[in-house]
Image (cartoon, rainbow, N blue to C red; front, side, top):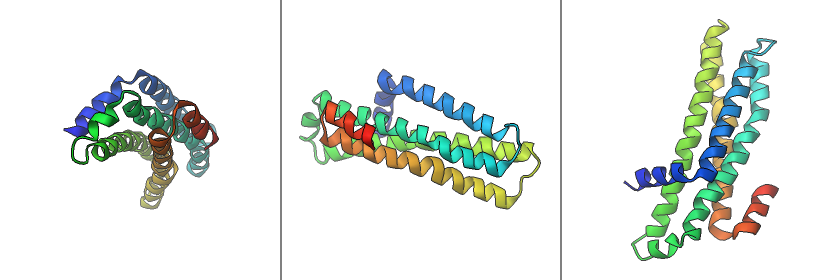
Length: 169
């Protein structure tokens, strides 16, 4: 129930959802461009994808900061501290929501990579496994690192130092 509530709260934050849709569209467009680009080389497209994953990192740093800072900004943290492990459970549910969004992004990238392998008729089990690991490392783990940095900043820093910390990371 806490995850469901946190998911609703995530999609109500316009300052997170609108940049998230833009970042997702840019990532999807660049991923498809690199996969079906001019050279039709799957390995070179994976190298290009690893450079594009910085967009996911930047989005998740700022999204996690805004999402977690919203708890502190609305003084919800004080009310949550009255329940047993209330604050910890709420922060964890917010992290799980962000991980769910990162998982959705990674799944989309993986599926588009696998579809490209089939489309280019070079789909082997070794390349599919490589696509799985590359997507996991380049998108999910990079997004996870961004989520952890943004969550740290949202929990312990105020607005201006938080943005400065997120920008420097």
